[in-house]
Length: 432
Image 1 (cartoon, one colour):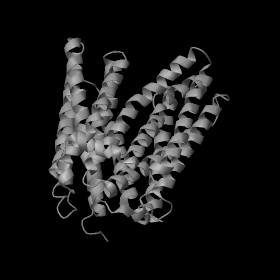
Image 2 (cartoon, rainbow, N blue to C red):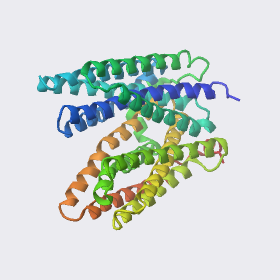
Image 3 (cartoon, helix red, strand yellow):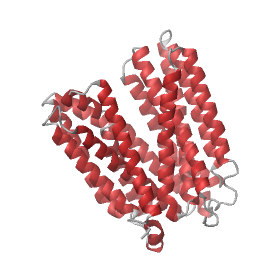
Image 4 (cartoon, rainbow, N blue to C red):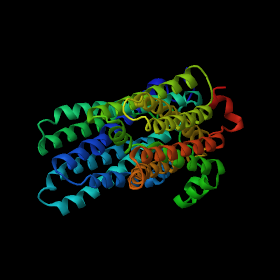
């Protein structure tokens, strides 16, 4: 049964379609266009890396978008408008690709603008979507809602990457533009269908006199809440740990374990399979079986990730032939467990304690996540480069993995207090 004013399971899946559309457009800019710049255009890899970093940096505006959706009392227009903005940025970024060979400076300037628009679109649509989920999902369904929406996003990324990769050969700039345009148009239409009248009959956005305050006042009020502040720090720290291995795991497999390019790509796929399984386990355990609380799953995911990273570091001393893939699958499993439980906890904290500022809260935590994603990978790669100047490859990578494990342990310690449910809703949230 569905509680009055809350999303049905079908409604949760509909919003999951929006998350899927977000993933399908973003993967074009972070994967397809990245490869075209580096391989076909022979541009330095740092260029697309900085552009992707820019799209993360612009997402620091997420609290503003959340605040605006709080103020207007509706999330749908911001979700659809953000998706349209994201799509426009993706089409512009694809169109600019053909300019790099002839007018590099102009192409670079337009790319910066396009990726900034992409970041704004992701921030507006993604923040409003999470705020809508947080305020309209029944407490006991939040873990499952987080699992469903994130698995659908992963599916959108995987399907889009595969289909676009197959359709793009033989590559031409015109073919790229047609494919990106089709993906964007499909995503906008699907988003409109997914949110059409979905807010009817749901609990309205809670607005009171405080919501008429300026954005800065709203943000200061949230930051003064010790629990919200502690959770923001937890999100930032744990996400840095989560993303530190993103740019170094495959090079580690190649340099230390002699993996071929194909084998290292398969390793990444195996890791994502572990993430999928970890997310599925938490959703079923918390919502379907009432096993454990979100806090316990977050803590277990962080500690399990730390142990897996320690194992990955230790296997470097063995080298080729070591069971690296098993350790990486374990890392993916615990990463998925931690991530989906943390998202569920985020929805619970915003939905139950938001006081009419759910969107602003989700925006603050989204900004912390985006900032950590942008810096985490760069920190990991930079640290490896420096350490390789002074020591062997396996020690250089191993030390970074150990540092990442230490961050996960610290995040687990923060989670004990940051994810603790309030007394009046402990039973509903934790499923205890």
